[in-house]
Image (cartoon, rainbow, N blue to C red):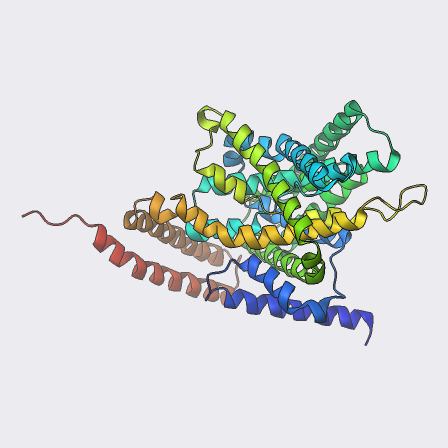
Length: 472
């Protein structure tokens, strides 16, 4: 069997496992991404141990897709309204978390300061995919979802940049605070410029194209092009992709595109994001070595508590300083702490640590850094991911507790009905103009009509329950 044949076969088997897990979790109370990690950890170790996560696979293949899909669906207006808390969490929060985590690692495990700070930098990036989907299913407040999701979009770039600065200091044996700050600012500003240029120019070009397939291709080229261009200039590819996606989602797709193109773009990126997320979490489970985790459980436990302590300092000491419209409700703080799950970016950074220093000497403590990084990511996904739902309910942030019950649900259903009716009208208009073929029109029209009927059926008892009783 050729290597190409084996790769395609492994990819198809992984997709089949993703499909099976996605179907099964609809029948059990288990977050989808957590279920993937569990399946990979417990069920795929013998068969897929040769399928490994590498830095290039995570950072060059998966990360641009994950960041673009996430930022594409974020409202810039809502993001700007929460810019201060998101920025504090994503930039100084990453630095503060690194310092606190690194200090605890140094004091508790005896690792050298520079190695401890390197671990603090690589573990500072958060991956909230496992909890954001849970937020939606439980109806958690929209602002809370935006804070967690917005932070993760930008702290990847901050974490990667700080990690690279600390790693360069270890490799060269020299570090300058002024130089480090200057490099960080240059990396971020350069990424913002490249992302803004690619996003603006790409969005303008998108409106001159009258083909959904070519428009989708343009967004894929823009996502990966912005990432690679920024990395070529040693800027943050992650931040460049996020800015590019914000332009496409809020400027490029907001006007000048047909409804069919907007729908095609959203559906395509939702699918790409789903596949990338699923494969990443499944491979994280495969990459976790049960024997190594068991042998080093106490080291991993200390490191996990250290990451929580670093996160707690940021959440409980920095966030309460915000005032006015930017203030964070106290009930959000425990969720922000517990929702800071670690994920694929941390593993990619751990795997990217070189084997040797320039002189040929082995990189100090490389193996133990990778062991505790994998262990902390696994513990974070499983422990925090599984307990997030009860925490949200305990804090009264579930929709049924925070809203007005049936009346709130009825309002939501009415809004969805109006959206479906608008979609049907736009679909008919596009078909009359020849933008949509007959077969596609019939399929979409049938689907919308079926959804309309289901919403009507769901709304009827709620409206009956919320009607004022007749006076006597």
